[in-house]
Image (cartoon, rainbow over all chains, first blue to last red; front, side, top):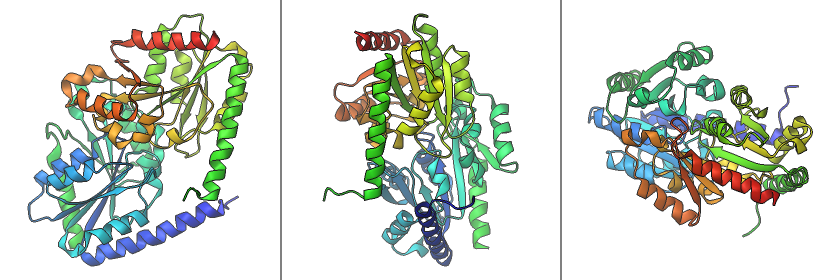
Length: 221
Length: 221
């Protein structure tokens, strides 16, 4: 049986088509776009803040922040120097390509930007299933979430281009078996590049910012 | 406009009817049931483990553990002394009343149990929308998730009967404004009973276990 429920299949096809249109639009404007995903509270907004501080000031950044409610995240991204748009999903537990298209409309002339960071809704499940049209997907794992998350949320760990392991400053205080965690990641994504770091202390941040800078350069090459 | 999309409306109505049937079944068997919800890694399974250790041994406990993949949680609940059933949701980001009905079928004679703990899928959004038929809903917040979660996930904080604030042992290492957090909770649920505690150190656990024990007694009275 390969037939899926038609209504679900149609929604996913329509989303993928819109995602392809978003991608074409970003490519044409020369904007490298990242889809940032994580659990609630893993540090998506903190990562955006800390990254903006360290990126060369020549790189113009836009941020699109998805949430159920409030503009807390977009306000923080804006305060950190990004042009920021808040998407309130109205209860939806993930962003989709329509929502990103509307946010791109709001951003106006995209050619002003070098980098777009899309902060997805805090959720380790559904965001993995919806293409947005971004160039890279980045997942933030967080030490206090526990070392079993790759095993329990395989869909999310399987489909990403880079993995940030945040809050390593808490390692002394939490039972977290890094070997067990890394083994779970390796089973799903053997070559996944990972960046253990702390948004709070700044430890490990250089490697992540280097990777991001190189990715932007390669995109423009 | 009060009309909703019919297909969604029908699904929710069907779910609520099944939830009512689950509730009647639990009532008849004399099983007090709790729907335990939280983000991934907030400590649902750890709470079950630590609670089972402290409950009087006369209370017979069943656990139903919802996850996308693996039986890690049910294995832990079983090792802690519960009769445990794992539900793998096949990608769904929440439990629903059908899944609980099937789990109740698997548990066999429900009258053996005094307490059923349903560990929902790790998600701060969709589980709030699906009634299961349990008697009380309990939300676990976690200090490292950050103090803005009530503001950002109001649907979840609004509909619960008790709030556990887990991982208070990490308060010295994390910028967490307890006043700001509590203010957010109070706006949504002015009279919500809350239990700051640590599953790791056991601090604050007595009050939670007392509340649970009293709730079970009141249910049987």
